[in-house]
Image (cartoon, rainbow, N blue to C red; front, top):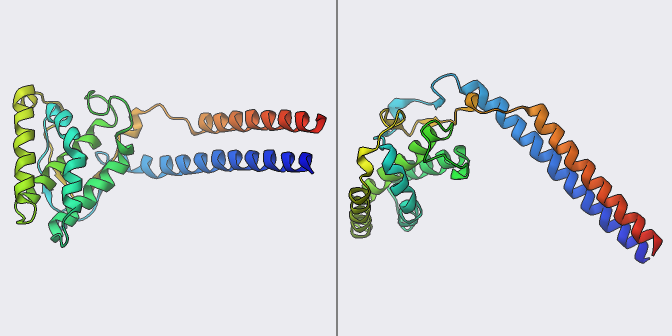
Length: 218
C-alpha cells in the first residue's frame, strides 16, 4: 500500500511538472507569435486615438521617481467609491500597460534607454502620473493626491530627474494605444525554449524514476 501511494504521489508530481512546462511553453510561444506582428508599427497596439486620453511622456530620470510611488497612486485610485470615467480609463491603461511590460520584472527596464522594455516602462509610468493628476481634481482624493504630488516633485528636484532625457522621452501616449516591448531587439528562439522545457521534463522524469526505484526497494 505504501509503495503504491509513493508511486502515485511521484507520478502526480511528474504530471504536474510536465503540465506546467508544456503550458508555459505554449503561452510564451503564443505571446511571441501575437506580439511579433505588432512590433512593426512603432511597437504599439493602436485603437481609436480619438476615443483615448492623451498622456504626456516622462523624462528618463522621472521613471525612477515615479516607480517608487506607483503603488501608492494606484491604491489611492482604488479607494474611490465612484470613480469618474477618466480615472477608470487611466487605471485600466496603467494596469494593462504594466502587464504588457511584464510587470516591471525585466532588469534594466527603467535604467537602460536601449532596453526593449524601456518604451513600455515610460508608458505605464506616464499613465500613473496622469492618473495622479486626475486624482488631484477629485474632491475625495484631492488632499492625499496633492500630498503625493508634492512629495514626488521634491524627489524629482533633489535627483534632478527632469534633466535626464532619452529617446523614449518625447512621444506622448494615448490610452487607446498599448506600447509593446520591442520584441525584435530580444534574442528569442521558441525552439530553444522548447528544448529547455524538454530538458526540464527529462530531468523531472529522471528524478521521478529514481524516487520510484528507491520506493520500490523499501
